[in-house]
Length: 350
Length: 260
Image (cartoon, rainbow over all chains, first blue to last red):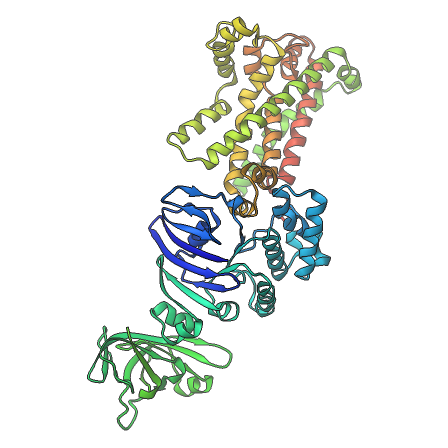
């Protein structure tokens, strides 16, 4: 059971060019900003968009091959989708929604309903079978959508932002349920998300898509440790600074100088955890090597910490405590000094 | 609100209300039942209901796919096709009747062949009334249903296709239920327009009692000879039209109280 896809498709100004291999029982999360081609990739895999070039093989069966013109209609593909906003049919009850795919394939009504009920039981919604979608909570609607997708016994399950429509309070519980249900599905699982927490909790591997191309893939730990772009760095919450290393110093394109503990030569990335950035109202005493004059551009107060966005030769995000913020009396526009210990700067060649 | 505007608005309301009040004032209340149940009234009423219902069926059968085409398929000249298919809505009905005559009349562009090959004649027949009514009524259905198709979230159809539904199954089980309010509103509007049709009918189908003389034609004729009958039949049409508008407003056009 393997998905083997080379997807090339142009939509408007976006050219999607993706090479993807996923094994059965594996969950791969596709992360990317809006407009990076995540939805287009899913529409191609589901057969809602034909390929311009490339080929999609699932378990040795060709679903789409631009070279030969082979194309399996979406209705004939063993591919199921849990759509963003779930797209439950509003005129049908929960059990009719789950039975829809079975009925569409010609299963007799009674049999389809019995199967659909069994699926609703599996996702813990047996007593909601006759509810209309509008009477379901977001988390319940998501489980109905999952049951509806799995009831058709697909070999490839596509989940498009399965948690984005939920409020933050319920997301954790729903995510845990989803993870449990996904683990019982032995086909290929692909998940689109923009939330790294979803990727952390649901996927074994992440693929990062930007402007139609895969710019990085691997386990989440690998990607977090060595993010390849500013988007990935901000996504996983670290400072990523690109520059050129020479004589123990990395010089950024904006002229900032970074002195790491482990020097590198040539093009390199420096990764700085936001909590390693210290802020001072005046230039600190002594001679720390990494001190930069910066301007506060944005202050984001969260419950137990504050993220301060800083602009300058070395643009940074600093994470400090609310107490530290109060002591510094920071406002956007203020000029401060940012300092990082050399040992807190990780480097790796670009 | 400035007092001047309020006065003008009130005059506007009076302008619409007064004619109906006039009818009610002149109505022969004692004879309403006997006029309504007279053979000539019942004949016109039956014919009107028969023809307007069949005109609505034709509008649904041909207008729904037409609305779908205009809403979903992008092709060159779509704006022109839409204008052509809704032209009869704004055209003077008598012009529509004349045009139909030269297309479908016994010596018309298509009508001569219908007559010669199939012995099928439309002008001055009940079928001719239905065709004339459908011609002026269908655009109401087309524009209403086209709007419904356009407002539809096509992702629901995508979802149905990924679940294994053929295009026809998707249309039947997902698309049609979703546009049902638009279909009902369009059909009711078309039906009401067909019921009130006068100009195209009298031009294309003539004015034969029991065959082509629908309510509006009967009213026109009666107004010359038997004004009481004209008033009573008018009140019936007013009642039906008013009921249609009220029902549409509350149930389909989103008027009245805001949706819960």
